[in-house]
Image (cartoon, rainbow, N blue to C red; front, side, top):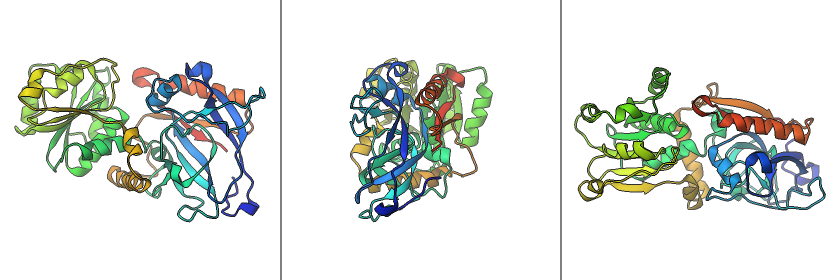
Amino acid sequence: MLSRYRFLSSYVSPKARAIVFEKYGNPKDVLRAYTHELPPLTPTTLHIRFLASPINPADINQIEGVYPAKPTFTKELGILPDGEHKELAVGGNEGVAEIIAVGEQIKDLNVGDWVIMGRSGFGTWRTHAATTPNDVIRFNNKEIGLIQAATLSVNPCTAYRMLKDFVTLKKGDFMIQCGANSSVGQSVIQIAKAWGINTINIVRDRPDIENLKTHLKSLGATHIITDRELRNYKTKGLIKEWTGGNIIKLGLNCVGGEVATEMAKFLGQNGTHVTYGAMSRQPFFVPASHLIFKDIKFLGFWMSRWNKTHSREEKGEMLNEVIKLMKFKKESPADIAFEEVLWGNQSESDESLKNKFLSALDKSGAGFHGKKQILKMQS
């Protein structure tokens, strides 16, 4: 275990392992593992040790160069094995780290604090990093386990903001969402349950649909229908029966295509349809009647944009509130299906670490039964 110090005189910077890239492209072609020394600690900087970091779809898009939020390319990581001093970016946008050293002028952070990154593009697929207080957000880790913490900052926070920011939802109100079994969708279910909000959840039909319905019910889902059932003419009457004739105020869309169009039909007068993803990669159509007669608002949400316009304090408050709402427990795994990948061992070669990462990358896109891959750092 690394020694942890606040004072500069007795601290030696650790060696870091990272997954980096110097240009955009196919991740299999441009990613490499890289070993480097952290810059010396200064009075105004801190060193962090990453504990766990997931591989998310947006991370891949970022490496490909097609994601709006760009990574940080820097020469501060050092010189590559070929002798060139190139600008490199570290992959990954989400993860949890522990502070292992604090500059003597920093008063509001301490060794041992758990933090997440305060901005996208920081780079979380690494064992260690040097940074400043402005780039990290401390949170209360007493109520949360490692895997939950590693996957806290994107999906649960996206769910929280969408339920809170667009429509005033009261206890007993109804909302509808597609992609309900996604990580965000499951977070929506749990937070809505805590607030007494009823959820109508649309999922893609599949062979083990009853198992999925049982799982979502265990999280607090009120009603669940498949995309096939959504298109059935009887569904309108069924949903009216569920809601008791009350309007559905909010719809959350991460799929797009026909499902998003069909879902909008169930929103009530002055309803709000929020898009935060497009997993089908298909456009959806908005009938003129939704705009003219029902005055439905079609809006979008992007967590990275919210993070850019809000302070560290606001982000920290949100994290602690989300943890309380979702009732995380240290002994319980995350509600997502995941697989831990032990990564970053100092005795492994860069080539071995690269191959291990690329294997996890392949598994992360394995369709229906794919599991989220989470790098559990060995440092």
